[in-house]
Amino acid sequence: MAVYTTHHGEAQREHLSKFTAPAIEAELAIWAVSPEELLDAMNRHMPTRVFFNDTKLAGSVFRGMLKEELSLPIKHPQRSHLEAERIFKEGV
Image 1: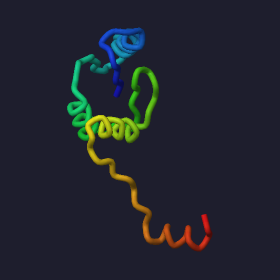
Image 2: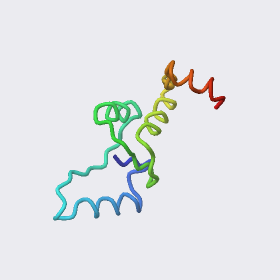
Image 3: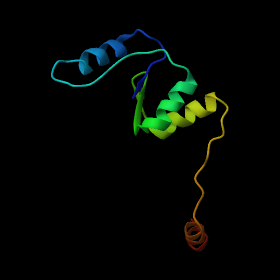
Image 4: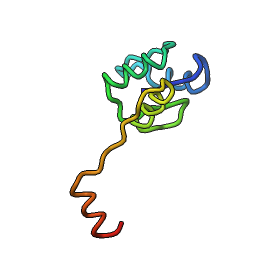
């Protein structure tokens, strides 16, 4: 998934020309969408990475950015009981 903060720009032109080449069977479109719509797309398609203005981010990082923008709670992973016990014993 690629996300841009503007409709027009060099990165968009490069991606459009790169991914709409005749030999590549990919569907590429640029739409104006809200943060809510982006989060919905992220939740449905679960991309592992997102290009945000030509910067590569982990999908989970971008999802967190969207949730922060929308003032939604961000779940942080909980350490398992066994991992917590190991850390306590090893002092790590």
